[in-house]
Figure (cartoon, rainbow, N blue to C red):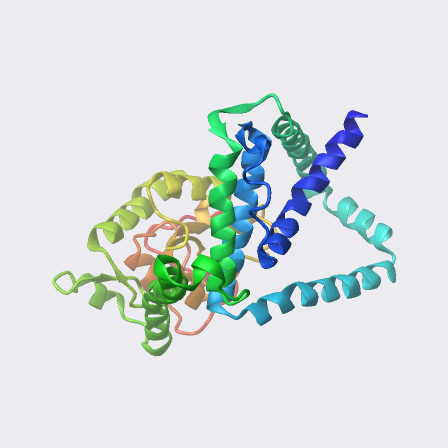
Length: 353
C-alpha cells in the first residue's frame, strides 16, 4: 500500500503541471483558491511542486519570448518522434551483447566501480525523494494561499505575455497590460546584451592571427592578452602564469579532475580557463590516459584551447603561459604526437615514462 500511495503522489506531481496549463488557458486556475483547504499549512512536497510548476512556466515563457509559441510547441513533438525512432532502432540490434562487451572491455577503466557509485547515488536520491513525499514536514507558518495565489498570477502572466492566451478582464489594461508588453522586450534585450560581448570576442579570435608571445609580454601598458589575443586582466593572467610555474610542476602524477579542482580552488573559472593538454589527448571519453596527468596539463585560456585543437602546444604558447614543465614544439605546423623527441624541446620539461 505505501508503494501505491507513493506512485499516486508522483503521478499527481507531474500531472499538476499540465493541469495548471489547461486551467490557465481556460481562465479557471483561480477556482478553489478561496476554499477552506487553501488555509492549510504547506508541506515540503507542496512547496517543491509549486517551485517545479513555476520553473516550468518560467522556462517555457523564456523560450516563447526568444522563439515563438509555435516553435516551442513543435519541439516536444520532434523530440518524441526522434525518441520513437531511436527506440525502434535500439531493438533492431543486439543491445545486451553490445552492453556486456563494452562493460567487459572497460574493466581496466573502472566501469563497474563507476556503476556502483551511480547506483549508490540513485539510492541516496531515492531516500531524499521519499522524505520530500512525507506530509509530516511542514514549512513554518506558510499557508497554501501564500504560494498558490502568486503562482496563479505568474502562470496567467506568462501565457498572456507570450501570446498563448488573449488578455481578458483586468489583464486588458493597467499595470498588468504594461508588464505583459514590456517584459518580453526586456528579456530579449538582456539576452542579447549578455551574448553580444561573447560573440564579438569569438569573431575577433577567428579573424585575428596568432599574436607572438613577445607582443603579449610588452603589452602591459595596453592591457594583457591570452596567447591568441583574447583580452585578459593582467592580474588574472599573472596568477595563471604563477599557477603553471609553481603549482603544476608539483602535480605531475595528479589526474585531470584533481587539476581541475585545484584550479577551481585558485579561482580560475572553468568556462574561461581550461585544463589544457600539451600533448594531444588521445580520447575525450576517458580521463585516465597517460596524457591526462599533471605532467602534460596546464592552465590554458578556453579560446586558446579551442584554437590549438588536436595539436602539440607550441613552445611560444607554453612560455607565454608559464608552463615550462610541459612538452612543446618549435614547429610552425600542427604536430599530433609527442613521439619525436626533437619536436618537444622545452626549457625545463622532463621526460615522463
